[in-house]
Amino acid sequence: MKSFSAKNEQLAALLSDLRHPACEHGISTDWLSIDSDAHTAKLTFPFAIEKTSLLDAINNDPDLSGWTWAVDCQVKRLSNSKPDQPMKTGNVIVVSSGKGGVGKSSVSVSLALALSRMGARVGLLDADIYGPSIPTMLGQPEHKLEVKNDKLQPIQYEGLVANSIGYLVDDNDATIWRGPMASRALQQLFNDTDWGLLDYLIVDMPPGTGDIQLTMAQQLPVTGAVVVTTPQNVALKDAEKGVSMFERLEIPLIGVLENMSYFECGHCGTASHLFGQGGGDQLATRHAVANLGQWPLTPEFGAQLDASQKHTSLELSELQQHTAQRVVAELYHLKQQSV
Image (tube, rainbow, N blue to C red):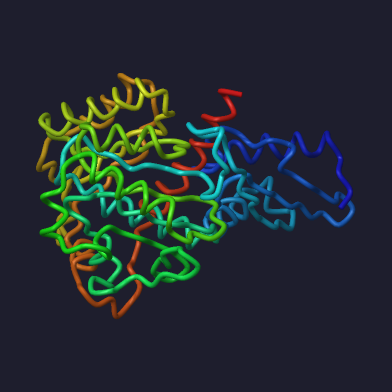
């Protein structure tokens, strides 16, 4: 394809103005390859991309729709907290919360599944030692892991690979483990799983900021972190501790995701803020990080996750997909700023 820098700059500027979470930080001319004679353009992102929604936005723009567009991604492996270790698992994103009950695990599943559906190679590690819920959420609660070539074989859900402490031990056994024992088990789960070649590994962290959380954050090659909260003051105070933990460990905080922000009436569409309003946004503002989204309380999605057998694929909302897009876009740009 022929490349013309002036035209690249013009198209990059127009793309940066699109209302799409992949374009909020601008578009690099390096990502563009154009052929002015054929009036075709290819856009290659260094992070996972929602191709359909982006192409819809491009084709609805009068200045861009005259071109024939192709969109692709080549996910870049970004620096992490363990530069001396080989980057076997791609970009490791930990999903954390200061307390339980804020929907951290459902957020982890949603992000992992959304990224996988974008075409990225994604793994999901359930590190919630005292309440592993990923086996139920992925519909394989009774699965027993196989070992091949001294490696645990992760389960597969659609194109996603996942592993959980819940596949290895009985729930009642894990609840009586002391911190050091639990930490060692989780490190082994991370190191001894045959993840294959990944673009992203989503880690569903245990709630809180105690020894287990600190050990996991320090021992894993973490690329960035997402903190999940609800608007309640009690949840926000604990989420603040989680933010402080990552700041102290010098792990980049991608942003804050406010879950259960409101309940939307299915009959009249009225939004009711059951747990307060705007707390997650205030937390993000105080720490100068992105507000990744405000997810509603959705009983239908919760029922899908609770079903022990998945007869149909989990349905993700446009908001959940856009949030996953924001997470990986924010992560990439955070790392670029630190270079």
